[in-house]
Image (cartoon, rainbow, N blue to C red; front, side, top):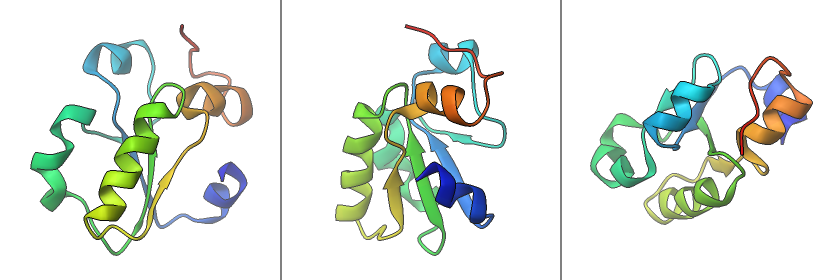
Length: 98
């Protein structure tokens, strides 16, 4: 998924972590909507672009990806391994936390 993301510039990164987690680290240009607020903000998300959803390790984002797909977002994808994997494979400047 990460290699594919590097080729696709027409996508949106969606961070579903809690605000306290975003204060620790974040991915530049990602949209932040906490997991618990997604259902009320579906109209803020485009259905015509790839949405790459991430959290800390990929568990919450997998649930949100499934929820979005069930609600018509056929271009929603989970970032397996979350921001933790992003830090290892893409940007070591993103702080890892536990």
